Image 1 (cartoon, rainbow, N blue to C red):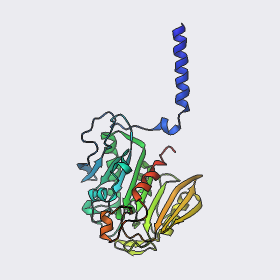
Image 2: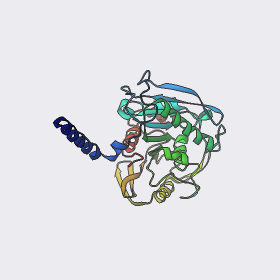
Image 3: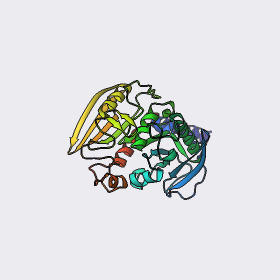
Image 4: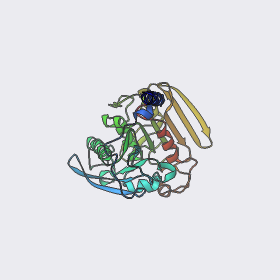
Length: 318
């Protein structure tokens, strides 16, 4: 009887510990891919032949080098710019490196014919087909890897950054906890806060980094290579309204202007970095491939670091 009483006391103590844990710790949702062994963690690998809307689609992925098949991991999808692919974006952003994405499953989808639907120059797929591809890709990831379903994120550069805006305004965006774009070309979001934009929830965490010297996607908006683009300031005003934001704070450090909004009572749900001397490239304090194309040298901020820290603040449960 004494042993039984001791067991009950231990069980009660364990219950108290469990219920004292933060809700986010209790509610991490592990996918069906947990317990499946993986080969070559820490090395970028490729997935071809994923059928979506009758088309063969592909993506690459990079598992943490210490991948544990029984541990649910956050996932980040990175969408490349036009005339590009996932491999280039991975090399350019360096997001798979341990200093940035070391504790996350990094995924790099490939657009058809090197771009994503939205701008007039894209012909390979419709917006709905690309959105369906995202949903099919996420389902594929969940079935293969141990994914924390409450911590799936999306980021992108240029045309891929604009597709982030398209995704955030769709039902497919409801699978994601937060979004971030670099030099975003928002061709599908040009007519105000409504504009057919129907975010899956509000507030929806969003961050964008843009160059004041961008000559491809002008900060002031106007005609772009694939149609008309909104002024970046207007685009943030619209997301401020969609998110029910009540406050905007600005800080300036040299050429970097950081704007942060409080939305739904939570600080920093909506954030923007304007870098005065940044052109159309991925912001980095080290040389990268897109800087060469501008051309320009390293910048004052590291976009990959900022974006990962932003994502770490949010889950679909918070």
